[in-house]
Image 1 (cartoon, helix red, strand yellow):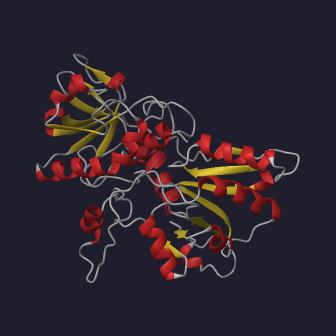
Image 2 (cartoon, rainbow, N blue to C red):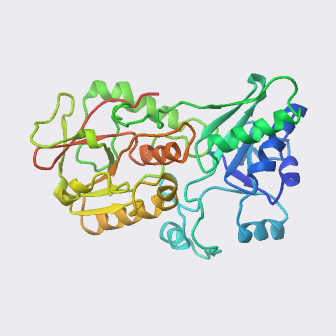
Image 3 (cartoon, rainbow, N blue to C red):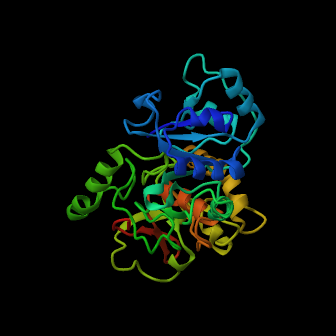
Length: 366
């Protein structure tokens, strides 16, 4: 993964970027409205940026965080800070100081600067300047919504900064993490080590697993683009309400038995699966006051860590995440779904009969 370079202001960011006049105009339009804030902008890197922090690419991502402690640290350091999230690679992102200690506490001399819980919860939106195609390409959905990006670009265009043509926002689509229901994206043929359903048909392995693992080994354009990311250490699956079929036998294609819900954990979303919570050993909720995508974004990683800790303490083999219909392209809804999709490695599960969990075997749609 490339590392995002954190800076205290636009001027320090421009020292790292090699931008054309149009790229600079678009960059300034975006940052004037959203910085400091949850937006990382990717552009061509100047030679001063070491390749080691760009995943050996010619591009660099820059962000100005919206937190007084972070800004004070950056001003005191007086250099850009190239840094990933403070957690084990691929594990659930940290949003509190104790999460950092859980993942990295084994490092001698570790010092944690505690600025309190993260305000947005999920990571920044990562957007690449692709002005050859008159677009800003969103590589990772996050705290800066499509509405925010488009409003910033529209204001820049209205002021004549981009010439006669508008600049549009488009989305990178390697993985179908923004589908309205994970069942549409099918399930991924991979499973974490130790998962009960890890033994798969050989043709499925050849078709899905090897290709997906090879692509995840390639240099990424931005962090958070791998299929398996933000993931608990316990096998995790998406569970849609439409895939709860009491009294039915497993459907064709749903051949991998995962066990009983009574030995599983449910992470609900505003009570959408409330009537089925009793089937699970324990249930958690991303937003107890009812479905709220913005509230769930703030709590998702903390709740995933709670569910993981309970599962590990009680030898639970499966965590189910309540799936939901995505509302609004580039919205908090889609960014939240992206995190849950990747936490589950794109896999979905059905709940059949009196509480039997069955995973479908297939491949994530691109």
